[in-house]
Amino acid sequence: LRPIHRLLSRAGTVAADVRREEQSSGSVETGSEDRTPKKKFSEVQKERREQAKRTVLIHCPNKISEKKFLKYLSQHGPINNHFFYESFGLYAVVEFCQQESVASLQSVTRTPSMDTEAAIPFRSRFFNLRLKSPSNQPSEQPHAQCSSQSSPSSKKLFELLCDAESIDDQLNTLLKEFQLTEENTRLRYLTCSLIEDIAGAYFPDCTVRPFGSSVNSFGKLGCDLDMFLDLDEIGKFSAHKTSGNFLMEFQVKNVPSERIATQKILSVIGECLDHFGPGCVGVQKILNARCPLVRFSHQASGFQCDLTTNNRIALKSSELLYIYGALDSRVRALVFSIRCWARAHSLTSSIPGAWITNFSLTIMVIFFLQRRSPPILPTLDYLKTLADAEDKCIIEGHNCTFIRDLNRIKPSGNTETLELLLKEFFEYFGNFAFNKNSINIRQGREQNKPESSPLHIQNPFETSLNISKNVSQSQLQKFVDLARESAWILQQQDQDRPSPSSHQPWGLATLLLPSVANSLCLAKKKKKKPASERIKNLLESIKSSSAENSTDTNGK
Ligand code: CTP
Ligand code: MG
Image (cartoon, rainbow, N blue to C red; front, top):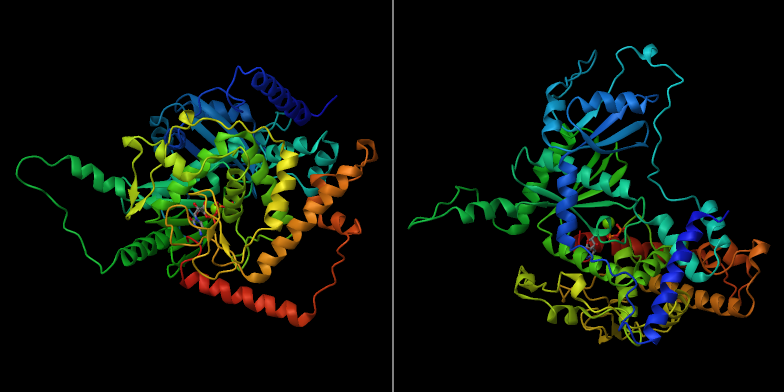
């Protein structure tokens, strides 16, 4: 029996073959393999948010009969969808068909009485289910099946990659194993919706929207959850209601700047999450960053959350990346592999510092794909020319206009394989003139660097900002060295690929596993750097990370 992932990726190969044939016969003009209309980012957001509002999160006893559980909850209305997962206990995500069911469930729910502690009576959509008499639950009942919320172990990934049939197959396998699952996506929207309820205690009608990798289609299982507290909708409602000669305004408190307003709002929401937010722990208010934020951990979902407000441009960049990710199936596969490659070699880290971020890597891949001949991705300026009046969007004076209906963007005629693109990516950036050029996806070509940061990647919308200002020269050099080394490994293997039956690592597997890569006796044998140099690098990264908090680097 073939593993299912192979069957799936073979199906992809067949689709690509059909496409090539169609192209050579001239019946199709471009390289799109999927003709089903794709949803607009705003449509996806709307559907998911609406779904999340009808959904509840329930902490369950460990041994629970799924059937009885569903029967019990159905008293409040029909259930549309549910799943269980484990995260220091068993949890269920239950989506009702109607929102009224949630209120009905809440109306029969009690606040627990504590023996030694006191409960803060906050009524949310996060519940705790207890068995009235645990012994009544017969143990032979089939227990709930859990959906996994984490990516495969390195061992499993290694096996999958070694079993793949081609490098293209390896990249697609990696994407399939690491991308967010349907359940994980639901859990992300639900978590935002639960936080929205808490923020709604202060600002009724506010919206908490996920952004960043949770929604831009480049999210890896386990990535953080970036949230945007949107208070603008509140203002909009009142704008419509005015008529006649008068204009009614709310009496409000004024503060000296937008930034101070943001800090005050986040400060109070941070307090609220800390004191009343069920399952919100480790709340940190990081209000002096360029983009002030509240960081906390949502225990039940296991997400590390970053809540910001007044950060609408980041939401727009998430939409742009979503479009780029959906335009061609090679984009996500390549980005995931490059992100995993960077993580495997500690080029990226979950701790902020002088290293390259996933966001920067994604923009670098997009830029590289714009530079292919013919281009695989269009420039942002081109997407702007396709925009119609409804797409027009100016945020804080920045023109963020681009076409939002991705079905109207002509797919690329480029048919290069992922294997070739991976190799060429490493070669391209292994030889890029980082000392004089800046990466610019708006124009899709190198620009002269406007300032002296080692790595300059122009923010697509706030064009005076460099999204990789935090990156030190030594981290950039490490990226370049590894890119060259990886290009070299792939080139060597072209001539001498181990047979699949030998179970030797090959292709992407050699690039991802540092220990394996080391044992390959690379031409460049690296000596460990002297301690003085390592300490210098460390100091450099600490310096840039503290600069990052006070200046304009990280969008946070
Ligand atoms: N962002 C930005 N400028 C930066 C950093 C971030 O505009 N210098 C925006 C981007 O839209 C990014 C989002 O903030 O997608 C979230 O940032 P971050 O969590 O760092 O990146 P993600 O894309 O979410 O990637 P990851 O999976 O590493 O979290
Ligand atoms: Mg993120």
